[in-house]
Length: 115
Image (cartoon, rainbow, N blue to C red; front, top):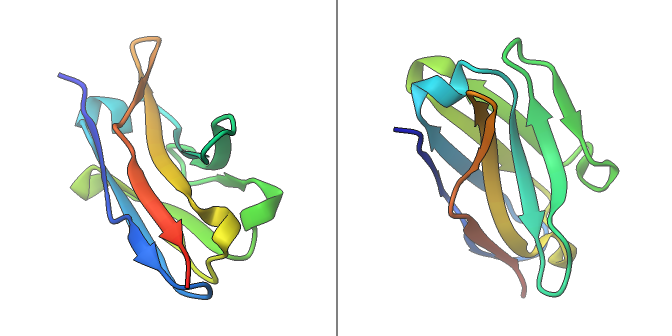
C-alpha cells in the first residue's frame, strides 16, 4: 500500500521556522525523486523543492537559502526545513512521490505565517 503522510505544519510568526515531515511507504521512497509542493488560497499548486534518490536537490527561487529538503531513507521520511518564514509562505504543503508509474500525493499540512 502506498502512503504519504505529512506532518509538522502549524502557525508561526514571520521569521520563524518549521520542519515538515513526510512519512512515505518504502516503495515510494526507493522509487526515485520526492517533492514538496504548496498551494495557497486561490492559487495553483506550485513546486517548492525536490530531492532525488541520490540526494540531489532543487528549489523554487522564492525559497532558496531559506528552505532545505532532505531525506532519511532508514526512516522512510522526507523533510522540509523552513527558516525565515514569510507571510507569503502560507499554504497547504504536500509531498509527493512516484511508484510504478503513478504519482502519489499526501493529504497536506497547513502552514500559516502570521503575526
